[in-house]
Image (cartoon, rainbow, N blue to C red; front, side, top):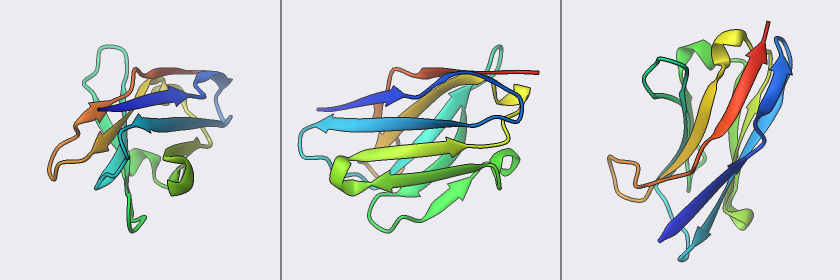
Length: 118
């Protein structure tokens, strides 16, 4: 069993920055990749960024490219999401997820609220 715990959400003005963290614990952690998802008010959950756990390859949703950066620290089993130049439309609950099975995300965190005021 793997537990994921997010932290770092909060309220920020437009143009500001936040860094989210997601710490994995439980059985010896090994994953194909980690992802950050978000679900805004009245919206479906969407994938924001992913990172390969072994090779560090990254991919981003178009609307966050150049503003968000996903990174990881394998020694700490932690993945980060640095969010800069935040916009009100980035307001959402952000979730991290771990893919230990190819093609799906098996474990999810509880989510952390990010609110961007205009």
